[in-house]
Amino acid sequence: MQGTIAERLIFNKFDKSISKRLSPDGRINTKDSSMIGISLVVAVVLIFSSLFYVWPHVQIVNLGYEISQANIEKNELLQLNKKLKLEIATLTSPYHVEDIAKRELRLTSPKINQLVVLK
Image (cartoon, rainbow, N blue to C red; front, side, top):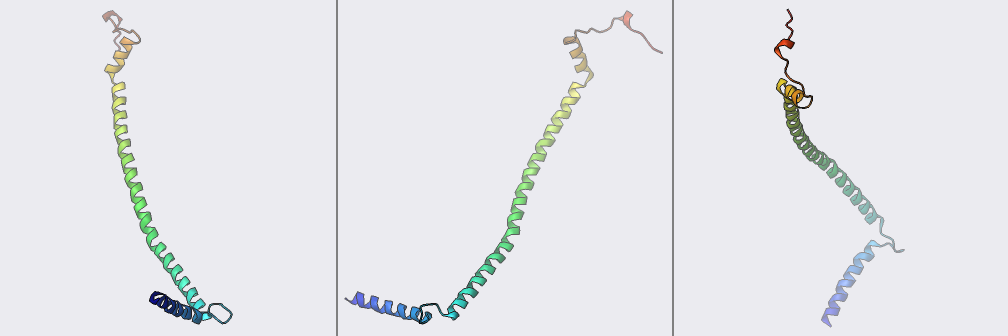
């Protein structure tokens, strides 16, 4: 029985605080509605200012990731470039050209009597 009396007292106290805020026709008082509006404006301003503060930092982190990825790609391309330059040097060397001429084209070295000396 005591629990129900306490519940009634709490409910009555809550009910009275609500009834103070309501006008006789059941609407919220204009003082409370203006406070809600001001609170809403303050909350929106805080959210937008937080976004303007956080956004550049997020962009900096993203750009850092992109820079590190570009550096990795650059190093891979430099290694590939070195390999390709070595391959070009190997393929254009006179020894390699002579080997291909003998193997694939079946050419032979000229004989002494086939040489012509130009002066």
